Image (cartoon, rainbow, N blue to C red; front, side, top):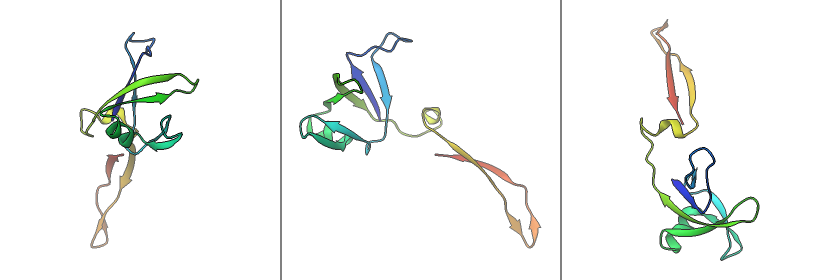
Length: 100
């Protein structure tokens, strides 16, 4: 999911800072004084919540779902591996597989 941190500015774009994370990532919840999944915080708070940043600043956050696809793949860390196969004792052409 893509979190927009309202009230913060990205120096390169001049727009609100954006953070890409998984729905299950834990953030500190100032309402419960504990860590919670960001998806649970957003659901509880009606799609908008507040997060505490690294320097103690509290910001308003909204979220947008991102589906993993060819268009969004570069937003995520990926891995590559060489896969080899054999058939009847003969080596087949190795293939490179990508994924996350």
